[in-house]
Length: 158
Image (tube, rainbow, N blue to C red):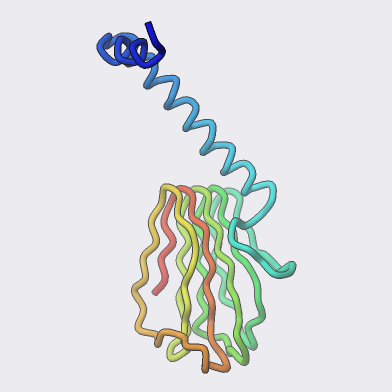
């Protein structure tokens, strides 16, 4: 028998099919866990041109309310919830916020009337954008760029 015929026999046998599915599920699960572990160890998936100050939540929840001129920085939630309130910041130039979520929720409250660009990656989570800010264009001298990576959980921007 050829290898393709063996595969057909496996598919016809429910017990062997279930075993093959379980083996495949384990491989996929290990791949996902490896990706999460690597992201925890290395930092954000999205590219950062340079090191930025990062606020991290490992377990629990945290509310951040920066004031004054906003500089590039990151927020990271491993197992927990993080709220970032940017309503009291001043955007003087193009500013980047990096949001990374492994398991939990991240909520970003955006300042009004600041052009925003949102970009990132989602593995097994959800991103929701509920804001009325203008979309950033190349001519905007000051804008906010949100880069995100979401593994399991939800990142909400309002």
